[in-house]
Length: 247
Image 1 (cartoon, helix red, strand yellow):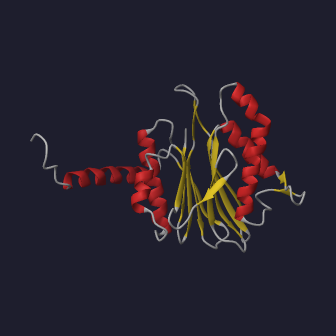
Image 2 (tube, one colour):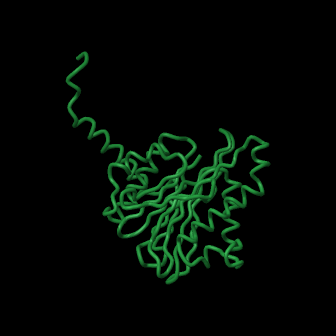
Image 3 (cartoon, rainbow, N blue to C red):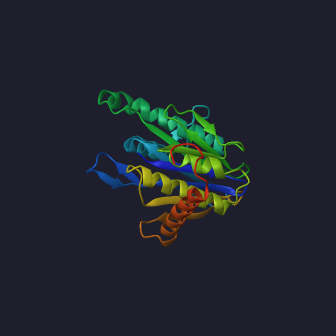
C-alpha cells in the first residue's frame, strides 16, 4: 500500500508520495513513487504512482522511452507531448499497453492489475493541471470544487484536506496540509512510511520549484507531527463534554 496526494491551488501544485513497498510483514522496502520530468521554461511534470510496483515501473518506463501516437505515428514521451491533456492520454495508453502485455499473466497468478497514478504539471502555452489516472487508462481532473486528488491509502488523510484545502489556499499552506495528511496516514497504516518525496510547481513558472525527500530524522517533519498531535489534544479538551450519558 502507499499514499500519494496532489493539491492544486491558485498559486501552484503540490505533489507528495511515500516510498514504502510492503509485500508482507518481513518484506518492506523503499522505492521512489514520485517522478519528476522538467525542461525549465518549457515544461514541469510530476507523476505519483500507487498499486503494483512492477506495473507502475513498467508504465513509467514506457512514458519515458515513448509510445507511438496512433493519430500521427510519431513516438511521444513526457518530454515531447504538447499539453498536459496529451500527457494524461499518454500515461493512459501506457497503462493499457502494460495490461495488454502482462494483465493476463497477473490474473493467472491472482495478483490482479492494480495501478493508479497522479499526473500534475504544466506545459508551455497551457495551464497547470492535475489528473488522476485509473487502471483502465481513463482519468479525471482536479477542479476548483475538488482541488486535491489522492491515490492509495487515502482515507486517513482525506478528512484533513476536506476541512482545510480550497483553491485559494496558499501554496506553502497546501504543502503543510499535505504533510499533515501524510503524517495522519503513516500513524494509522503500517503500509505507508517514510521517507516522503515531495515536489512543488508554481503556476506559470514552467520549472520545479522544490523537489525534496523527507527522511525519518527531518527536524521540520518531526516538529510538525508533534505540533499537530498537541493541537488535536488541545482541541478535544476545549470542546465541552456531551450533555447526555452517564456522568
